[in-house]
Figure 1 (cartoon, rainbow, N blue to C red):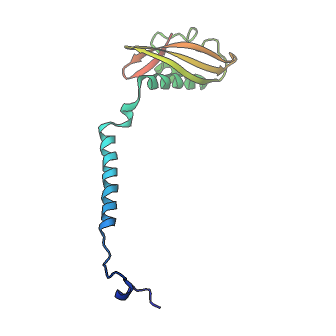
Figure 2 (figure 1 turned 90 degrees about the vertical axis):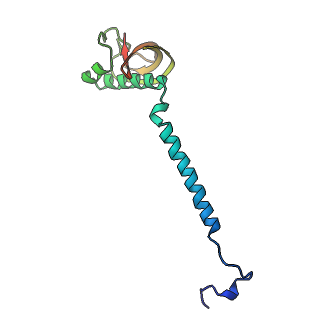
Length: 141
């Protein structure tokens, strides 16, 4: 037996058409084009809220404190920041953030309830103050 398609094997006598395949390719191209245009018009980095930025600053600050990274802490805090009265004053050891909630942004100032655990302080929630420094938020007293 031969694997070749013979004219006599085509019951209806119709020839194969590329139409359905071309239609499917066109639909996929339109979908991909739509995704490209949407990402070009509204990039993901522009979809970050001020609340997200505040949360990121809090997380970065806690990470720097856990590593005792003085240089990074300096870039993440206000110029007048005093660690002895800062949000992690009295905490000794590694701290884990359980949540950053109730972020309130008012112009260049923000407040957030930060839940932490560890560091000899157990579980606690405190309100942190932040200030906008250019396009980022820094932790203040």
